[in-house]
Length: 221
Image 1: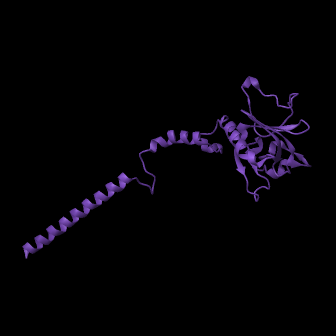
Image 2 (image 1 turned 135 degrees about the vertical axis):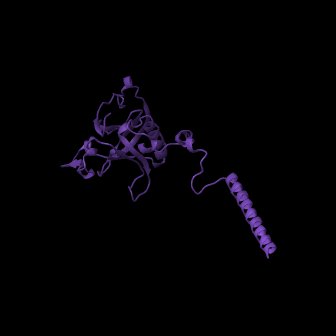
Image 3 (image 1 turned 90 degrees about the vertical axis):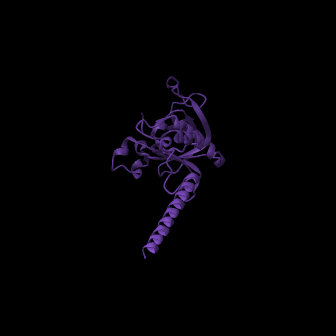
């Protein structure tokens, strides 16, 4: 597993990246004229984004670019809030080799104007057409699901947003053990009816006990 961003320049004559066919890597989506922002830096001029079954690859106009393995992407999300970032984008967090270093900071990712890829922990993908953002996110999520974190015990720890299939898996899996137990503050109609009937029975018994006690007092006096 390769953590963090790394330079990428393995481009074929047609401008597409050369994939690791021996490992089963396949191209999933191509997004032309997509800008890329690494950490706090300004966006790179628009280039071509390639999502594969293994990696996120971005290639600039000069043929040089960056890549990151999906297994190193710890979180991805759609960002449309202009207060968070001026352009609609796919926001990602990247796990790096330097991530375990407590002194590592995003501000250290640039030294003398040069980007230090090993310390970049945030990346934003900015499509030229904001209307493509949702489709891009769906493709991103699909590729991410193909690369689960081998150290994660549950999908919730991966930081991925799943669709209906993921929800069904969750329902059919860990939640099945608790299917007969109602959450706190929730109850079904059968439980309510049972509780009301039981309360009525207890009230009737209490009334009968009071009448018997009054009768015994009258007989005793």
